[in-house]
Image (cartoon, rainbow, N blue to C red; front, top):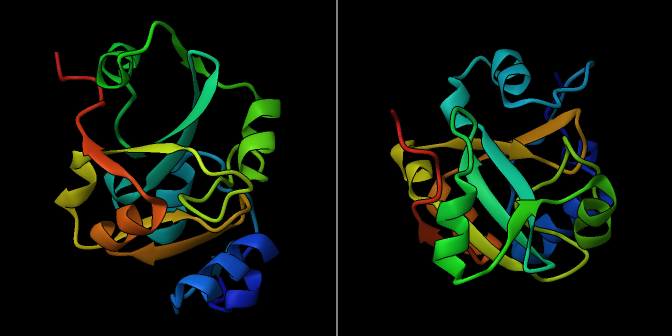
Amino acid sequence: MSDQATDAHPRFAEALRELGLDVPVRRFPDATRTAAEAAAAIGCDVSEIVKSLIFAVDGDPVLVLLDGSSRVDLERVREELGADAVKRANADLVRKTTGYAIGGVPPFGHLTRTRVLADRALLDHPVVWAAAGTPHTVFPLDPKTLIEHAGGRLVDVRERAA
């Protein structure tokens, strides 16, 4: 792993500069496209990974930030937004909305401004790790700052334990 900010996707590196964030960006030799792969590469718990997921909510993209050990409850997202339909966005919508490929979507620094829902469980950790614009890069940040820079609204949208 390296710790050079230049390892981030150029658009994301620019977003970090614009926000005045000086965070280490780690690059891995192999892609970490899943939360479990990222956690294993970092050496942290999978719940400390931030998943940045795009959903089509009544046809409009919405970003959901969620801990890596959880799954999004689409019904809870629908209720939270007062929507009729919520479905996982396809790869084209993800790239068109964020400018990044699935597996490397960061929580901010996107091409477009979207609504952002941040699951409250992210606050259970002092530091969380999120993609830095590629499936090979991650960065650490305290969750409150991450959610603030993403423009996220705190909600409960993860699936409830059975």
